[in-house]
Length: 87
Image (cartoon, helix red, strand yellow):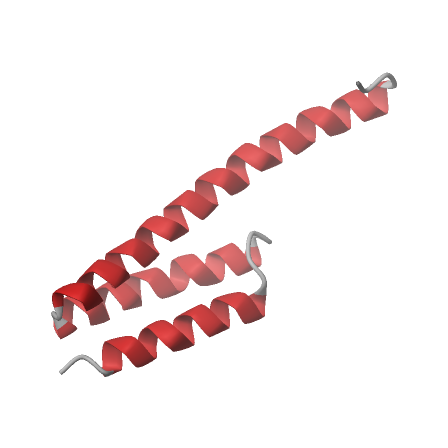
């Protein structure tokens, strides 16, 4: 357990950050799930719209330090390829 005032403050800050990042990750996963569901349904317009809505959320996750830039780029690339492949 933290003993010094500095360590106690750090523990509080870490908990706050954890809650904020957890909410961000959850929000991003929701957007990704919507894209996945649209792809599964085979609706190209819905999938394209969902992907377009998910892109800024994912990039915001990079800016805020929740995800690594290359991870998000890879996810977006794979999703866009799958959306493009819908007949």
